[in-house]
Image (cartoon, rainbow, N blue to C red):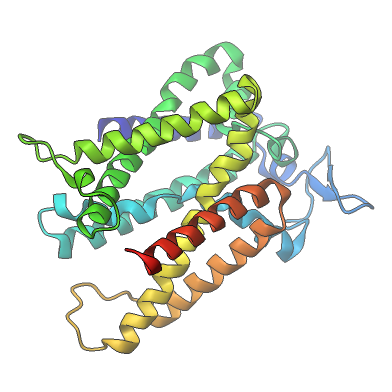
Length: 310
């Protein structure tokens, strides 16, 4: 909780720093992308370019990257065993989490791009918030602020480690994974074996990639392929959740539903459509293609294992 609040405080500090800065100019900086004769992006020094230089296709092509603003929020229900009243607490927690991500994500998108160099420079930035801090405070202070900004990553890691621990235990209880993975700590009742096993697998994967890709060069591979595998995994998850929702509404219309989605069947269909569009545009991007195919093969093997054995 403390780490998450530190991460949010850094974002709020960035918002006020940028808005109070004299060179903050949305029209000139954020709107500084045009389209050249070859269809590629070109810089507009004076800004005031079109709001959507690449039209609707630009929106769809950006969706695999926009997913990162919300990635892993779907893991929140795995905390239901720790909540006091899941029927009341889980919907509230998930919706507050989504609202927090939506507000901070939109503010970052608007405020960060309104700094000098704007959209055209941030198009290829690997660390846009830190680049924004460098513009405002210079490289020296930006390094200090970067230490605090790392809190955002730590908050994410804690949440995802917690989630995969719960997921591994659930799959072990159901008989899909070996039974020993569901053993919990004698005193604290935490899924310590599952957390350790998941951490070990993740660490081994990273070490193998590091040495097979040539050390430092592995960073590009991890950023361009391995992390984008998570996007496809999330989209596949959202797709199946939407389809499952539709099946439950159709086959079991009268079961008890402590929480009913205000968007209902329409919301589920929109989820399915958005997930399919995002996956489609992932497949058209060479940066995503290798990781997407890798995850698809993994899922295919898992489905065969489920059908033939589990």
